[in-house]
Image (cartoon, rainbow, N blue to C red; front, top):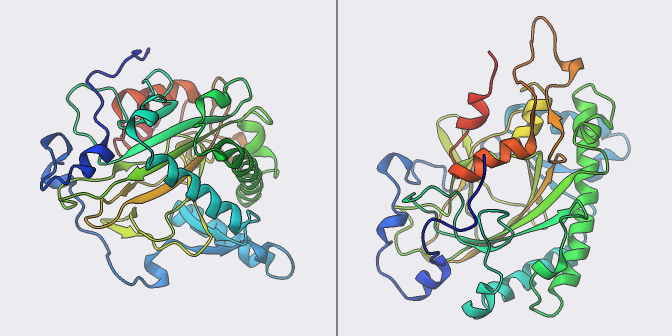
Length: 356
C-alpha cells in the first residue's frame, strides 16, 4: 500500500476557522448523530470511574509489589493509567507546553512553512487519513520524529520560538527514558524477562515520535470531536495533558469517561502493538477528544513504537493450547499504513487482524 504525496483536498486549518468567530461548525466537521460526544461522564468521578493513578515513587521500597499490581490491573482492566513522580521535571513540562502554545499562536503563514504531507505526516497538519470527503476532526497538530536517528531531522522541527528545538530535545530524551522504564515494568507484569518488550520492539532501534495536538474553541462542540474514537496503533503512548482544560475521554464499556489529570502527570495507554505482543492480555482501548465551546486545549502525545520493519507477534511464553496466538506477525510499518489511509476508526483494524 502506498500513500499519496498530497492531501486529497485543500487543507483548512481549524485554528484559523475558530479565530474567524464562526457561529456554526462547517458541515465537513459535523459527526453523524451516533458519533457525537454523548453520553459520557462529565463531573466529579469516583476512583472507580476514572483511570487509575500510579505513584511511581511506590516502586522503591516496601510498596513496590502493590504498585506493580496496580499497574498490572490498570493494563488489564483499563488500558490506561496516569503516573506521577515519574522523573521528568515539572519545570520541563511547563516549558514544553509553553513553547508549543507560542508556536500555535504564531502567524499562520509561519506555521504553514512546516505544512505536512500524507507521505510522512511530519510537520504541521490538520487532518488524519487521506480518504477524500471524510468527516474531519476539530483540531490541528504538529508531528515529528525523535527516533530512530535516521528519521530525526531538526530542520523539520519548528525554529520558533527560539528555544523550541532545545526544549524539545530535552523533553524527548526524558520521555524516551520514561518509556523504557515502563516497558520493563509491563514485561515483568506479563511474566516475561524485564527486557522482553524492548527487544521485541527492536532493542535500541525503536521508533519514537511526538504529535502535539491543538484543539481550538468550537462554536458547537456537541456536533463534532477534537479527535475521533481510536486506539493508538503503536506500542505505548505517554500523553502530557493540558493542565487546565479536560477533553480526553476513554471508553469504559458503554460509556465515555472524561479523564481528570493529576498535576504534573503523564497519561499512559497501551497501544495496539503491545496488545499483539501480550496476546491481548493487555488491551488497547478506544479514546477520543471532546471539543470545547470556551477553551482551547493543547496536549502532547509521545509514541514509543516498534522498529518499523520487524514482525510483531504474540510472545511465545504467552501462547498456549488454552490461549492460542490471536494475531499473525505484521510489521508496524504495514499496520501504520492502514491507519494513515483510513484515519481513526475505533478498534476496527486490530480486531480485524485476529486469527480466531
